[in-house]
Each structure stands twice: as C-alpha cells, then as structure tokens.
Image (tube, rainbow, N blue to C red; front, side, top):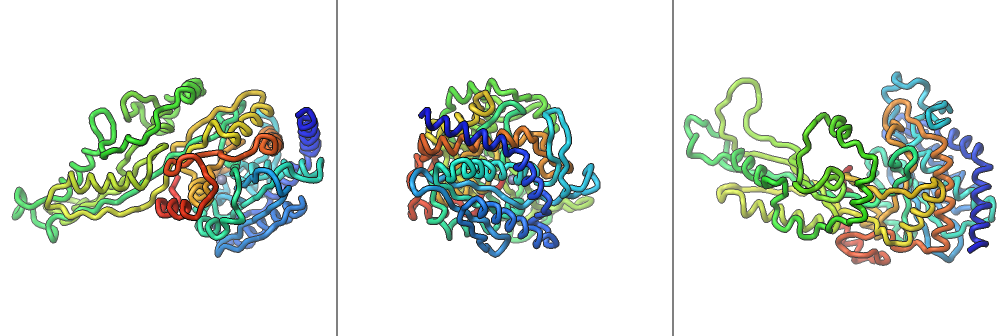
Length: 499
Ligand SMILES: [Zn+2]
C-alpha cells in the first residue's frame, strides 16, 4: 500500500509538472471548430477526431477511427491484460458558437483570462466537453509518462454527435458490444456542486413519453345541432388528464408508486446540507410557489420522486373568432419522470390500463409510445463509487456530494441498456461555465483538479477493483452483460431518453 501511494504521489507530481503542457494541448484541441451539427464544419469535426486519435495513439493506445454513418467515434484501448477495465466516454463535438457577436472574442481562438477562481480558458467547448475530456487524456498521459504503462485496462469511446442527439451511438455500441465490455464506466461531462464542492451525479430519472389520441364523433359536428347530445372528446380528455393527479399532488396511475425506492436517509440528510438556493431556483424558473407531491421537499421531488407532466393538448377550434364545433378528435402528450426502481414498461402499461378503465365507453383511444428509458442509479456502496469518492476527497480536500439529476443523460441509458454499465458521472464544470452560450469557459483550477482526480481514480480502480458501479431497476445489481438482458433492455427503451 505504501509502495502504491508513493507511486501515486509520483504520477501526481508528474501531472502537476506537466500542467502547462496539458493546457497548451487543450488550447490546440479548442482551436478546431468541431461544430458537429453544422455541415459546413464537417471537415473540422473530423479533424478534431483525428487530432484526438493522434494524441491517444501517441500515448501508446491502440486507436481506431470508427466510422458510424455520421461523425466517427474515436475508440482507443490500452493498459494491462489484468484488472478491472474502465470505459471512458466523452465527446469531441461542440455546440454552434452562435450568436458569435455576443462573444468577447473569437470562440475558436481560445484565450486564457483571469477570473475569481484564477485563470480560465474561454472558448467554445472549453467545459463541454473538450476540457473535461482532456482531464482523462492527461491523467492517462501522466501514468504512461511516469510508469510506462497504465494501472488498469482502459477503453475510450469519444463520439462527435453528442450535441446533435448521438444519433449513431446506440447502434455503434450495440455493434461493438464485445469491444466495449468493461467493469466500470466513467464520464466527465457534468458540473460540480459549487466551486469548492465536487459532486458525483448518482441518479438519473427515467422517462415514459406518450401521446393519447381520443376520437368521439366520426367528424366535427355543429354544437347548435348536436350540443348536449354528441360525445365531446375534449371533455373526456380534459377529465382524464385532470384525474392523473389527486388533491395531494400524487399521480393516480395504478401501481405508480409500488416500486419507488424509499428515500435513503443518509442521502436525504446530505441533500439537506447542500447549498441549494430554493428561492433562486424558483425565480430562475419564473414562478414563486411550487407545486408537487405533498410531504417531499424540492430536491426530493426533483431527484427521488417520480412525476407526471402534460406537455401539450390539441383539438377543436383555436383560431380567431368563434366556431361552434364539437371536435371529432382530441390529443394530448404527457410524460412521466421515473425514479429507481420504477420500470418504464410497467408505467406504460399502467397508462394504457388507466385509459381503458377511465375513459368513457364511447371514446376510441390510441396510445402512442414516444420514448421510454428506465431510471438509473449508481450504487453508493459499490467499489467504483468509493474509488470516485476517495479520489475527489483526496484532490479537493473535501468529500464530494452525491447529487441526483432530474433529467436523463442519453448516453447513460445507452451504456446501461447495451453494456449493463451505469456510468459514474464525475464532472468538473461549474454552473456558470456558460456551456452552450457565448463566452463558454473552463476554470484551469478545475482542469488541474480533474486531471489529478482521474490520476487517483486509475490507482483506485487498480487497488479496489471497479465492478458494480451501478444498478438498473429492472435487473437489480449489475451483472456481466448478457445478450438476453441487453435485448430485453433494448426493447424497454425504444430510443434513448431525452434530457
Ligand atoms: Zn457535453
């Protein structure tokens, strides 16, 4: 152990000594305008993939620029034959810089400027995700430079379509399932709690998104001729939607809460201590009084409790002036956010059942599946979680907080469904990094701390093992990926869930 920590100290010192070079390489990477969504930037986007492939090959990794039908995936493997394999995911594409005139300089001419946390690099992609991705690359470099090898086997999968919905990623991961098999997955593309408090995003809500179409009369009818007699699908739809919540804010779908995991007391206690400004959060959303399920505070409602929202309603006449119509059809889109251990398939079935039981007998209905994804949770007792926690604590000098994410991260769903891996989301961004906005920046102090954290995590995986980072509600504890399970998971998530 002492030998191990001496080695770790040497690798860490190597990373520190090389930090200026690391910044220089990040700046080079940021100079490439890899706006994946812009056809005019297709060649630049490929150039970013090639740049990264060269860097990784230079580290001695076996690198492949894998074609996908869209922008290529940079796939790299290296390290010893033994030990837990770590799969890293990142993306080399960036958001469009528009509006360019709102930037204080050229978005692809990176500038190092001083801020309240010291120097920062300002450029498109600085935080999302080139800067964060390079924390991993530079940590690997430090291990290679100091020891001539890596402490554990690693695989890197870096795509170029994250900002445009990762269209080709699910098929790619499915096709390369064997090559991508790993014991733990790690992603650095999220934010810290605040400038001094690191965070591990430990749970992501799942989703079920549906459209309900109701038909009443065979055609639109005149309410003067038929009003009071003909069935009106808008009335039935409105009553149905209103009945989806009770007076206490609970969702009334049959069995909806049956699998909801009781709140973990330790986690709840930790959340209560988070520097979360509730009033500011409401203000940001443009409202003052929150709604929601009785008996739960805001963070629990966002991270630990499921919910249902109507996303749109259509039907009848909504043009200028009056038209006395009884519409033939009414439509609504609504969606549920799910938490462990709910299952998207079961919630969809519960919606179907509610439609059958609650809609009037005359209403012919059609329920469309617009997307499903199971919720994901990292097991806080797993060795991999402990590795991340200890690494962050060692580098930041304070324990990380485990936070939830009310939305979904599509790639996490893909890794879970296809590889049976729930990724550890360990990010070094800050809320004010202005990702997707003008003057995006990444704090160099966090670039440095990110590199050191990954240096530590690589050592941690070697000594503590890395298996079992997470669990999927449908299958319980993570097992080695199996074809049957992956096939089942694929059926249950017809497409990756949306954020
Ligand atoms: Zn990103």
